[in-house]
Image (spheres, rainbow, N blue to C red):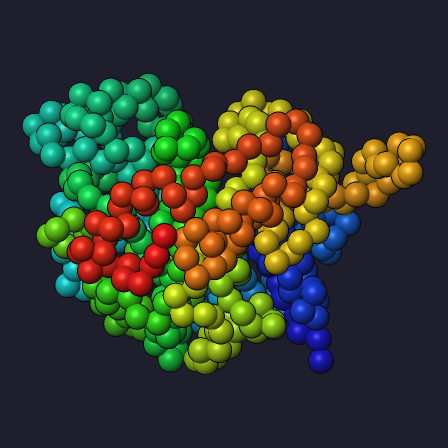
Length: 449
């Protein structure tokens, strides 16, 4: 019997998952929340059946689904909680777990209660109070927002004056003052070291046997220059044994068990010669493009069934121990500012994106585009863009070099007019220096360049 997947999405995150589910024989229904101006999002148009009436989710589709998946932890967790408690097959969405990420202070407390060493932090709801605190406490150089805030509000300052300037600048915006008052933010002690994260999957049977070690490339440009984006790419590997997981992931197991949480858990850290210093959780969601790295790592013929199995206490995920993955975001200008400039990005042809082993489509749809037929130009149905976050390209291998070669070979096959761009140093750049340092500290053992 055909299985049924319901996706409740907040921002066109799940086209790749929906397409892969369909190829594996699942029937898919996808709710993709409209844009802030009320216009529908067009990702997957002509490719996946989308739900337009939000009210039908509770009235019709929750009972229909064999698996319910949410890619984000900000919306609808409270709405779905009675259904989750009643036994509906809802993966990830869990208000108490999401709070450990969205409420920075609560997340820090959970780490401390689990026996982890944490960086000192203090919660604020007012920029003036934060500015006064920084002037008296110069080691607090990191600011991180709570709730569904703009990621650009996560800031690591070089000195107190730098942070005071940024706090003063944010204070000048009414919307940010309001967000601070409602949801708060933390100022955190700055540690100097190497940033590395580790994730895993928790279910009724405890932790999965697989751990996902990962390094994010958040800045727009090569060499970690430019503005912070959601992320431009990720280096990762899947392992059965992880020293970092043992220290900053497994200890929270009892808290997750008490919650009844099922889903992905990630902890991002700074590693120095004292210890790994956990910074923040990712809970009740996968993260992007981590979702695509994981898709590339997982070898199950059915990319959805192992997630349903997790809900039922079975660990059926199949991976290759030690396999490396590199993911690269291909974006269009004015990313990451397109939602501010409102630049029209629908209908740009996408060529060379047929290879689903490496290509993970995001803001793309079926449209029409000029196509060469012999020596003539003819308008034909084709894959086109419908936003700035066009796709993520992945490559895997036994080493970082092999994974990079695989990813960038596939990147070069994609042709999009209007100057698409991507970083050239995912998996390289700072890792050239940092990987040997990690090895000396006992982390990422076996990972080779």
